[in-house]
Picture 1 (cartoon, rainbow, N blue to C red):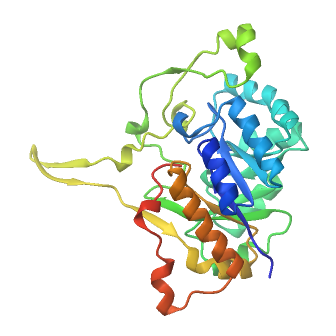
Picture 2: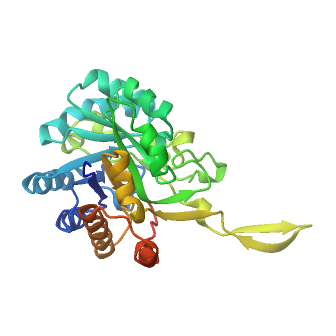
Picture 3: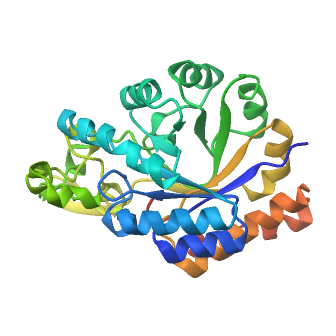
Length: 313
């Protein structure tokens, strides 16, 4: 039985170090301006370079989330800057736009491409589709069971990752199109790369909408759905509700996923504080190393503390 790799999130440099120390085989981060995680959980260019040095020195791998759906002019800027990532030694990126995925595969054959969980893959046909499109890996949600994963893993030529620690939302992750998802406050497109400030293009980067990736923005989520919604009847407020969401932590199925042939166990949670992230990664590291199924009397140990609930991506 192959041992799946553990892929941990990091929202800052301190979290990168903590994830490595806790036993992550690889770490994924967001690049400022190009990640759905939001500005507070992204790395600027200097931080990204520092993260790559640290991860490489530890013999681990760094993945960079470029998982927005940018406008056409932003798309051109993204393609122009990918060589700088390769120059840093970063050759693994996570993307959420199938057009960008196909274009990146054609232009940069040395780039390893992962189809983000936001791409919505959940079946054998989905895995085959993204393989044929040019993806080297695809991320599936933790709602996909080990039994289903065994069938999906029959698709050859693509690595399969499972998001074993995540929040299941009431919409397909990454595909929300609620009108109120848009935050109508345009912001300046950040100068992510050092050379941007020295060029006319860098000085005139333009404005972008920081709302839904479905509505012309880069996809920063303001978690509108997780705010209380008021219910009215005949003009009178009768209740306050939250849309359903569920924390999924499938640590009890680590062995089953390994037996099903999963290549990577991925954790969501770039928003987690460093100490909680380290504990979460360590817990999954121990489960992977043990690779034993938890029996009924051990069920309580498989329920992770509520503090580890993912607040954001």
